[in-house]
Amino acid sequence: MAGRASRREAERLLVSGRVRINGEVVAELGTRVVPGRDRVEVDDLPVELAGEVRWIALHKPAGVLTTRSDPHGGRTVYDVLPADAAGLRYVGRLDRDTEGLLLLSNEGDVIHRLLHPSHEVEREYRAWVVGVPAPGALEQLRTGVELEDGTARARRVWLLKQEGGGTLLGVVLTEGRKREVRRMLAALGHPVRRLTRVRFGSVELGGLEPGAFRPLTEEERESLRTLAGVR
Image (cartoon, rainbow, N blue to C red):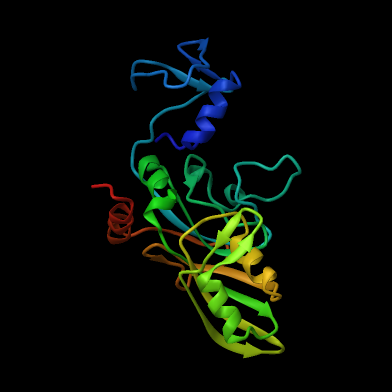
């Protein structure tokens, strides 16, 4: 809830000895703390609960990494955002070359539930691909494409436009596997030229320009909580 790490990342921080509680290194999973009484530090920096709940929508530009920091010096989403967004967590990832809608928040329980596969939250993309997929290829995207980490399926897929030897597709998934759209289409012989996420759940990218961001409306926030099953 402090926006410092996901639950899984928090476990890794603990077992690696990077967490101190009241000055003592603690590595036991499930250790309890009382906010406001116990002092929690990660890498000698204090971790505090965020005050106001924040949600923002960012149009992530292509070439920007969805990560906290890059040891190789690459530009990250936190370089695009203002300093006061440093405590926000991204809701799922977009790979370096993919652009479009990325949500960030400090409402950790809602983030965790939105990303859990059981909630089947929709992610909608626009994918420019090489060539013109036959109707059978589009149907295979719906019924399932075998990838190295299991079968992947699109909830919906449709052809939007053909131009210059390529095709623009609309694709909706309910998973957030690494480079899933790109791998599915490459497996069918239609590699992606450009990929943009235009919707996550009930929130749409709209006319947000690359690198620009905006706060979510209260209606959008409540809709995401409903999708996550949080009241």
